[in-house]
Image (cartoon, rainbow over all chains, first blue to last red):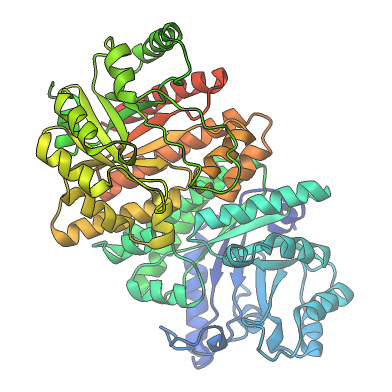
Length: 311
Length: 311
């Protein structure tokens, strides 16, 4: 745990964190193929100046949206298992997501107890809809971590769209903070205006309560085709109509999306710096197309450069 | 009418137009005081690299909003009269607004007939609410101008907020274009995202119809106090919450608003250039505070510099 490592940066709520996020391989892949995927991934990440990795925990979210899912749901490996068995070569911290509703409380406690807090952090994700039956609810999961592993840094998901609808996501952030969360990772950001509304409300609510705001890590993702755009919207992400149009009508949607992602990064960095709000970025690929994956790696490098310039 | 004048730029739908807008003096001012105001105004404008002036036609808009008007309504001089009698020293074109509902058709026709189309352009403004009784409605006013003065360039007001609510402002723009409007001036823009939605929908609707998009002039205005913010919102302008917060909590709201106005200008210029949409800016002061007027003059100079850089 070095002074410039992820743990330290998060503990001190310093700006400039860069994460890269991956979805673990499908459960149907052979062990050999999983090894190959891990090797290729580590190779791709080797040149990147990131502070850590995020491994998503994918849940069947068909309850989220009655419309047909644009990409089929395919069960993926447990991110903790993928990390433990295949990412031994990764020498930086990894934030392992946990859809807490999928796990029995004992299993969650067990995993927490055995996780190495110098290598592993976690983000707990709640159910994708209120109706879903859960094995462990969010409050209980947070309490379990507080009991068995308070030294394992815990983050929470923050959703600008929820703020646009309900206007209370900033209060939810404060409540999560009180229950031990020390950082936030956003859903993919395409709607900068709504994200700024949330940040602004959170920042001034913190100030009013005399609480220090915690780092918000903004997730950036390319949307290189209409199909990906559909999927992103199916997931509940608000994409402004002008941005949808610009992807729909572009001769090169991937290049257009790249341009927009960098503009979003700059806009949010300016905004947070002016406000005095600690921030970072998470670069994510939602697609499995090679061109999009390669562009995502380039995006991470460009965002790293943007963060270096502003140090 | 030189090749680089306002008329030519609008006729060719060239980007880079800069306008400065004024409200004529109150009707209660003495003739002497009006002369003084005109002299000070021309003096302030002398150093600015603008293409033309806008003179607003102020209507009692109490029907617009049942809430109390943050600033009292004070009748102002007819902009055509102010222009004819006091702005003889202004050697560039002037866009004279006409709240058409205030005028009898004959008076409107008469004014149009005597206006000098090399010095004067017009923007017709409709009633502030549907219930208002009008002397001349918009369709009729447009037809009158088509009959008596088709060579006088006519613009129309464009309102992003209407697009956010109804989603059809772009079609309204196209309809106005068919009725002879050759440019658009926006209401004050604080909500860049919504403005981009409108522009994008307009641009692609033009493309679909094989119509060339006409220049959209974006109105920028400082909001240097909470009182001005209230007034702007009373007028029906959407101000994103983060922008309201940034003015509300700033130690120097005028400086904060200045910063935001320049950011909005850059963002819209980038957006239009990437899209290939002709654009310009109109810098307006809604306040009568000296500090805000002076800052508005500086803003116009900075926007002029921004446009020069991009030529």
